[in-house]
Picture 1 (cartoon, one colour):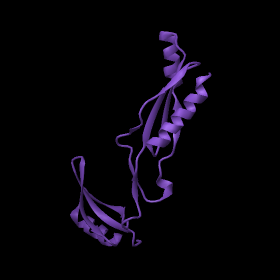
Picture 2 (tube, helix red, strand yellow):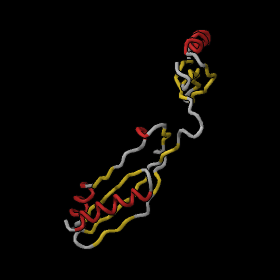
Picture 3 (cartoon, helix red, strand yellow):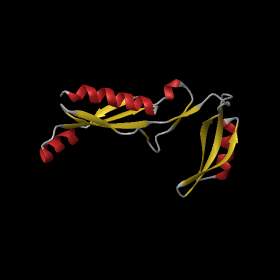
Length: 142
């Protein structure tokens, strides 16, 4: 086991896991778990030195495009539950832009309007807004 990882003993009580103890060596944790019996298991946990990690958030910005006329951008909002611990750049949340074609089809069928709905996701509010704006401008002229 590396210096950056510990083995922890976890006990499940109902639906809530409880961390019982941490061991530098997995073997030692497994010996204790075998004595504790059912409801306990060993899991690896990374030990992160201070300053080597940060929390990344996922931001959403919506745009409504009135095709051929204008578009409206919402204020970016941080998505609850989408934040993650970043230990290296591979853990960074990716960027994504989604155009909801089903909502556009429904808008046209019900109201006869040619509108498009854009959802842009990024690691910062500014970038989410930029992605939504770029896609909205692209869709503006149909």
